[in-house]
Image 1: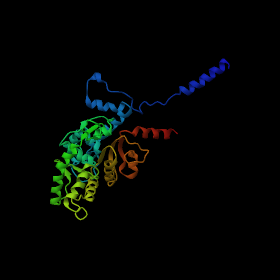
Image 2: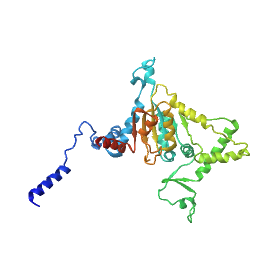
Image 3: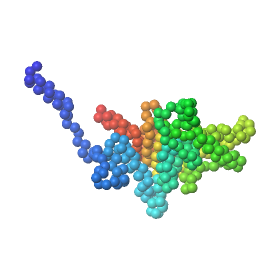
Image 4: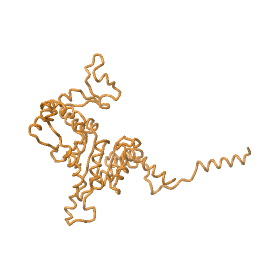
Length: 341
């Protein structure tokens, strides 16, 4: 092979490798991290996540959307009703918070408590575990363990160990916790049965808490055992929970939001995600949505579904601002690739 031919080959290789790229200046955010030499400013630090890249950018985008939920006022929109500017300024976004029980088992419970205490959310939807773990932690604590602890050891089959420890990821829950929970909750069930009333869980600041799957946890066990205390369970079922009234009240939170925008913050997937999204479908979709989870979309589960799938069902408004804390970059990349193709 002659020198000229070799040079031609190398020129071709260079053309392949060193292609001139598209200028992204002004179209994309530059990747930059927070400059700690300027001191620690937490507000600026969280803002900087948008430009940090990887999942930090997803978190930064989610923070911006949540702030938009908190900042929105009806006065930001063009007047469509006969009301004063003062009244329009008082109308805020109605925020639905959905979360799974593992977050209450962990230290995130204290963050949720802060949000509710300061009325930063308007409606809460969780699982049976989310209710019972909150109540149990008022009685006894949960402890840190390890993800790799053998189940047999925790159960008490290892020699020299008392056992009877339940594992939740890397958390340890002594079985005594559930014994103390039973001692506390059964008298409550007795009183509810004797008075034949239906109670909704309302916090002191009147934020409704909904649990569509109340029997799917330790509470279900307690309700099962309590049903046998009232004689023949076939003739006398004992305490009866009105799930129809519950779903009606929960959906009505969205249907009767009126002129307010609605926002969804969903931590985890499954039941809370579905019910929060489904309630907002009743009003033609939420205006804001933030998903934070580790689920994948390829198994077709609701937990792993992208926000765009919720748009197709009318659960999120077509023009809404959305962010999926784990998956949105992949979705955007697929859109970019399809446009290039």
